[in-house]
Image (cartoon, rainbow, N blue to C red; front, side, top):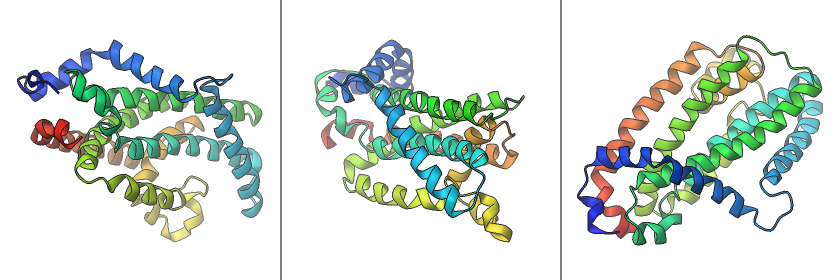
Length: 265
């Protein structure tokens, strides 16, 4: 990294990264294509893989729990594609800077560009997976209501969380390399502790336990609108509070450790 990177202020660095949207938008799309280079279907394999997972899990869990297939499949699909986005944001967020080490050391780009780049790639993945839900919604006649489009602000909230998470975890993981492995284990456990394959109502009088899990609320602000239902104000309150707090925390950590990033790489 060149000396010019440290002469600009942190707000200027963030602003410069934001206005470089043609760059990180293009890089995010190229990252998606690169993953499926030389394959015939390209990024559509994201959709196919998710569709296979949803159909397989839906058939098994709907039988085990005696659930109505027409109700369970849309519920599972909406929750699963949202979880994939969230989980990938956390795990891949730890590699925000380490994966771009050569680029960071060679070109004086604003460091937040790499967070924006990652979040574009993850959003593209979610958009591809959303096709799975749309297909299931058509098959099982999921109603379109006035609340359906509320999934758009839900996506904005998760995208903003992806930004601060990738910036914060990307910095911490440079200093403590075991963080990626730790979070992979934690997220592997959380997929079962979060109402993705099961419903909160199954907890009976202990539904409050699910509400203590912040992932429950992040899933809800996408899944509920996709199912034609209104997310609760609790879910919006929790996710917006965490978004604001996370952005402040990530900004402060970035401000403090910005000069160390290139050396930790």
